[in-house]
Length: 334
Image (cartoon, rainbow, N blue to C red; front, side):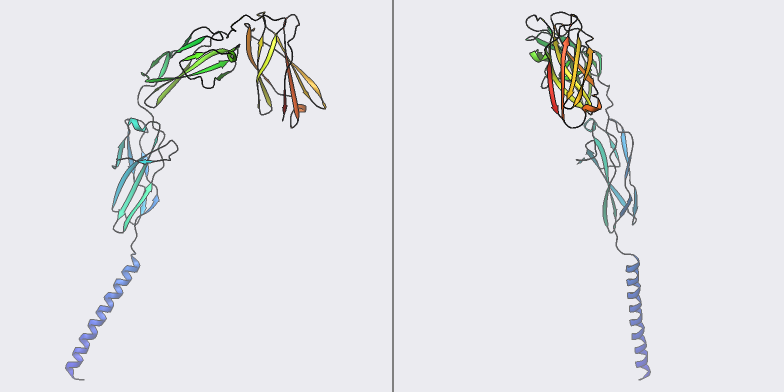
């Protein structure tokens, strides 16, 4: 090989070695720095008060793989943070409006780098409250009309602060001594037709005021005891069981007594079960029937009456002269 050939060979070898070296450097760099989009480590958070007029601020959270920018979207959700809807708001801050009252808000952050974009979502805020004046009742609802079977009662909503825009009504039956009141199914109008089922009860109305997602409730005083269409005349009291409910081991009995004498009466209870000795109880009315009265009494049966099997209660009303009503009986298989 001549001297010139040797020189050319040396140059060619150097070029090839240099190219190979640069290729190895590129491969090593690719292995050392693989392409990777951002990865969320700690989720975004929201700071601020969840109330109309307040401003919420987005916090990005913690990310791996060096995001170079962030994008924001706000979401309106139900009270549990579900069923979320994307809002048009896409800034790092969000001013709460009336449409958000009663809902919660979430934040979606998108982290971006040269290798891609990744979304992460915050927890929901507290339920958004209103900044408007509360709806407060300053004068109770009232009822006009005669509390007598066949008559009609009319409710007035009372007086409220906060300028409510709508009202709803729920009529209730209360015991004559006003211990227990229960809603009358379907009785949600401003007027109410007094019916035979109301005999012996007092009636009252619960009013709910509403405006812009806010609400307040108030209840009227109870009416006089609902009277029958014709006077009650009887030789002895009458008693009818209206409802029996068990709550755990305790029994609640609602019943109606009618008597032509406006005096308090005794309530005699007999509990029986096959194979065990009976038990006797005695209660008394605290408000006399006028001429009828609805009452609720409860007691805890003795252990021998509990558990599976047949259980019978018998109620009688007894007036001051000792006359008793016919028995009212309910039997249960438990």
